Amino acid sequence: MTAIIPPETEDGWQRHDDDNPFMILNGPIWYREEGGLLHVGFRSVHEVHGNSLGYIHGGMLAAFADFALGHKVWFAHDRKPIVTAHLDINYVSGGLAGEWIHCTPEIVRKTRSLCFVRGDIMAAGRVVATASGVWKSIERGGDRRPPT
Image 1 (cartoon, rainbow, N blue to C red):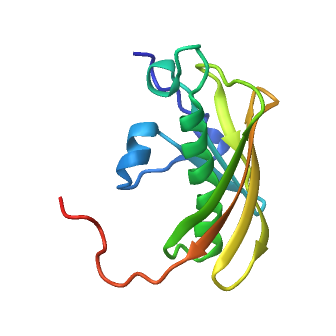
Image 2: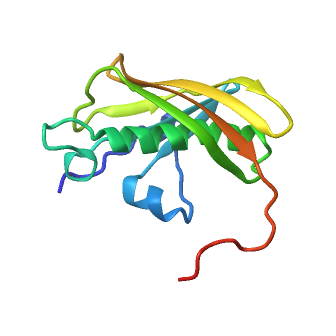
Image 3: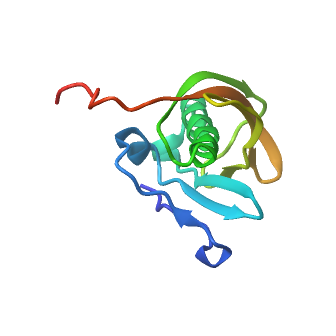
């Protein structure tokens, strides 16, 4: 398997480590905050993120878009629980194994309970996909996780 190559840590990138089992399998994901902007990215690895044509799988790009845009909302809502209400992905070009895939999501509008966000998924200076979505803040009322 190809080694995971982290971004340059001297550029302020931090590995996002949490207990989200889905993103643990799809990561690692990196982020940094700079001048009020949130940058989110990952280094694509064919054995983990690729499809049979040698490009990054569209499902991985969708999962990454959901994470990147949702992470921006999570910060904007003081790290309180949120859920994705809608996510729209447009695939523009193919991402290749080994490329640094990144997004700088932006909030379009924020209300008390909803947040509208968009972002371009980029690789080597080109747009790989565009994404937009709506996230809803929720009140956590007990543990609603399915039994293990």
